[in-house]
Length: 413
Image (cartoon, rainbow, N blue to C red):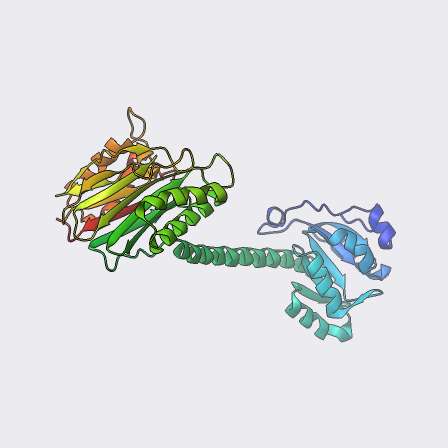
């Protein structure tokens, strides 16, 4: 079926193309129905197009306009096929084509040229049209084929564009993730490290968990934390806290003043008053085997010695941003050479345990650590195996972000 009016007024009275039509849903392997916007100033050529397509199996719904000015009202969001005469009273040649392509980026475009202007059709395809037809050399079968082909080609071009953009976003995300995650600075420290980070549900970008480790003036400082909530604001705050923490440590500020200053930054940078962060900061002087652990609403690290993990009973404090930090409150932990500290965020302990209590919690995580190490897994590979075991217990991917930092004093036992 075709509906043709007479010029711009006729187009308004005819069947108006449905701007909400989704191209990918309409264009199957064989196109059976096409919305057509015919931009043609010659009524005879417009009538001929109707007659040619009337004898084909292709169902078409045409809106006819005779000028570019009249076409503009229909081009925005149009997802069908535009049949375009390149010689209109108010537009000509490739400039006309470019305006149509810019105004209707989701449409397929087939251009009409005269017998002496076939070179224009070739140039039009090079400029972005899907096909061209020469007036006087077109029959119904060829016109229907061109409409089908052009819509299929437009769909393929769009799919290829979306794939390119998806790949580009993935590469950008990888570069951004590498830029946001820290390069741990322990070259002059007696401590070695193994870092692990994975966003919840295997998202492509970093979340609100953060970690870092820096050696400064004979003292190694380690931090791991988690901003409450999920989303870009939380991720940005986590990055801000990590960078601020490193800046404070590298500036030589006293250990006792680091967390109070970090709390001031959190109060100024958080998007909502309710946002807070849990964190655990540990400091170890070179030549000493005693580490100072400060835990603010965050589980303290586990001690791993001789292939066995043990919980640390640290003095708890409220999360950062809830109440003022007690700068003098810390727990001293003996860390002889060969012993490791496993820092982690709650993405692990929040995994489902399959029985009461519903979550793994710290005791359940300790069982997982001992189970993995009992299988002979190398300490350096512990983080990946822990996540695998936690997901097996959880029955699927972990919901929350997971960060781990394995710090070893000298060579592991």
